[in-house]
Image 1 (cartoon, rainbow, N blue to C red):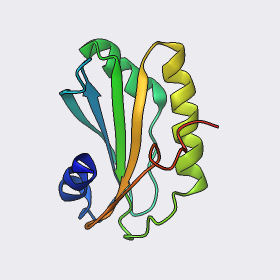
Image 2 (cartoon, rainbow, N blue to C red):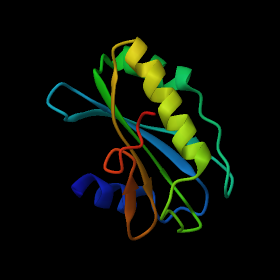
Image 3 (cartoon, rainbow, N blue to C red):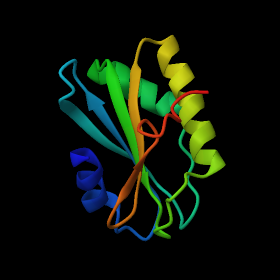
Image 4 (cartoon, rainbow, N blue to C red):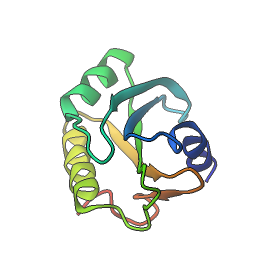
Length: 121
């Protein structure tokens, strides 16, 4: 809940999509934050390679990904949100990195794919 509120405050008000990755240590403390992509109003392109490359460089065992929905609508994640998250989760598992959560934010709230059991198929 704390993280959802923090991310809403940090990227929820942007008028374009922002994709953020939080790289965590074994104690779940943030060791590195990366704004990986700023997209247009409703689209962004992020490749798992970019996330894994940084994870290896900062030697992290866990990550959290987040992005905003500038429209403010996030009551349900898009099919693209779910598919990307599940594919990323599979790839991360292959290299020994745990995806803790994928959070979608708006200015005043958030949606956690982990809380809604949507991280994997």
